[in-house]
Image 1 (cartoon, one colour):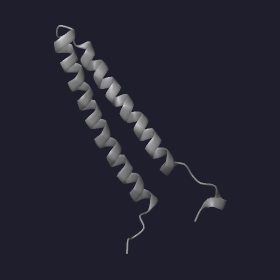
Image 2: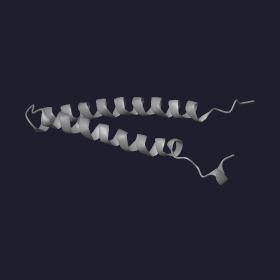
Image 3: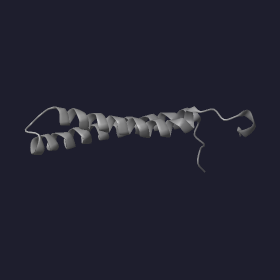
Length: 80
């Protein structure tokens, strides 16, 4: 029998997922930007920064969407 998790536990798990997702996308953006910089732009720094920014932006969008369900309050008639 599963123990029902509270809203706080659910929020904590989603924050952990958001942090992990942000780190992965940030690292992937840096990696893609670095490779692009080496191959196409003669070792310029700006592709690395743009790749990192895209990674953080994508992670922010995912986290915002994921946390919206937990952080919004349901009307009193819908609470169980």
